[in-house]
Image (cartoon, rainbow, N blue to C red):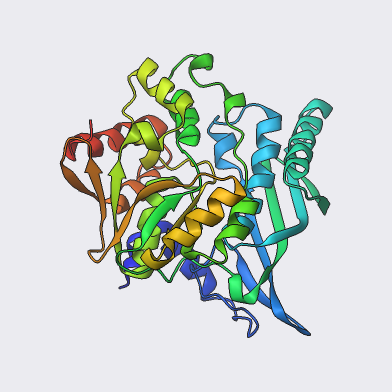
Length: 352
């Protein structure tokens, strides 16, 4: 059994993948990149990068209530997967499933959200499909191009590499906790959650990163997946005041929500989490400064295959992310139980 088998979602993906033939032109292995990388006939310099993502659970669970948010995230979720391999987008295909009795305002709101996200990211909707069913489901398929010698994957990091985030985090889990924790609507307004796909940052990383993955499933889950793929772990500097966005810190203080949940929860905000070899740090920081971006230092890669949280108290905690990542399936989608069990784990680990 591989380390990947410890996560229910990984096992599900592998069960599907084993039923399909593998394309001889596909450059990446299963799980090893955010987008699929495919050779282009007659082009020895670039890969086609293609990815697909569906937004359904977030809508069904009531995290997204604004049609504009639904459409925005549908576009960004796929575009972020392009960013995580360093690709430049060609465009987006969108499949929209709405209830039979949906009014025109819902469809227009979703469409406007998709279009606003595409404009923000300098790309276009190329086409798509429409369907009807009992509930809302939105799927985005993004396609792009990336130089073969610059394509980013999730594997390749080494002990001693520095770990960075492309920006501060926590807004996705703040919205999730605001919804699931029974807080008032204004505790963390939905309009505060407008994550972006960091395409320019991904292009910058082509020359510097040893591994890269987006944080769509939250920071700690991303670290855990990279740990399982590379057989190496992370020592994370948990200075939450530096890692979490200001509005997220304010939410935690106002609602007395533990800050660690903002990084460990499963609803991310599509930052890029990446590693850089020690010998390349100076060149990377110079390039980042020239590009006007401010990467956030997260910690270092360690030989021990564990996600170790180094707290400001001086304590260090190895977090069993399999326990948290498998929790949603194990609770059958019961969100009250899910939140309770999630926090129980944090209490056992001394995080709250």
